[in-house]
Length: 97
Image 1 (cartoon, rainbow, N blue to C red):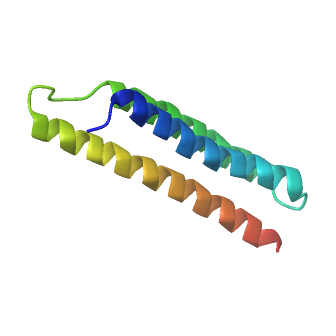
Image 2 (tube, one colour):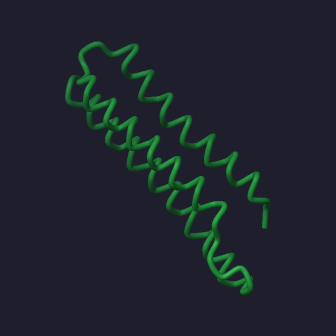
């Protein structure tokens, strides 16, 4: 398994890319609802904080299978959170097109 440090960097990267998409939409699409996009950006930031905290606090450290499953679930939650945010952002952009 990769290190927790690398996992945290991956969380930072994925969530920052989703957040930058929000700001890109705000900058280059003046017709989009700014409040809705900022709400999505706030959700991304909350998810980022939660995922980073979860990465450092694993349950069941004495059982390697539990640890592996824990991090597998964490990575799945990371991808779901990013995907959900990007789908919401896409829906906001489609409203004005």
